[in-house]
Amino acid sequence: MSRRTPRRRIPVALSLLVVLALIVASCGDDSTTETEAQGDADETALDDGGAASEGAASDDTTGEPLVEVTRSSLGDILSSGGFALYLFTPDPPGETTCFDSCAGLWPPLEGDGTVEVGAGLDAERFGLIDRGDGTMQVTYDGTPLYFYAPDSPGTTDGQGLNEVWFVVDADGAAVTSTAGGGSGPGY
Image (cartoon, rainbow, N blue to C red):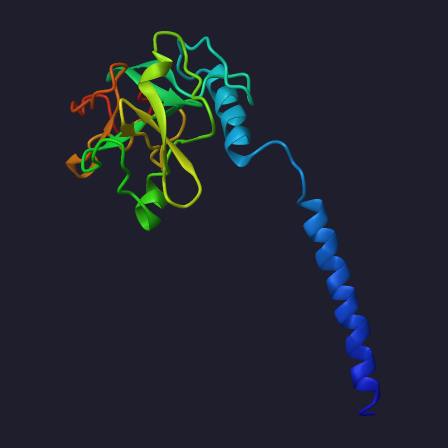
């Protein structure tokens, strides 16, 4: 019996390797990224009664602007895929200080190459900074842009949190008013 145990382990191990290889192969070259899929879902949410955006330029991958101006109860603010964009006041210009658990709650707006923007925005004011982990974060006049993970399309639940997180207006400044922020339709 001691001889059969090694023989049975080899076919089982080979079977596991084959299954693993099939799984890896199935994860291969999918051209739609998670961010693009989220942007597509968010646009659908906007079409179903969300905010009316003013965007016109398109992102090379989704056919939509990466950043656009959206009308909200806080005024005209920056958004991406229907989600409000925020700035973190402790960030120095051109740098991000939000990593690990902070970035879990406040995910960075990531970009790749040129930042496509909607109508009313100057593309030259947008840039990308290296987050140090191989991803690039979109900036507006050097200020890193973030989402607030608990937000839904059309809400600004992160507005004014801890007095350091604020939505960004169309001029790139923090909207420090909390009127209209919080739960519910913020746009």
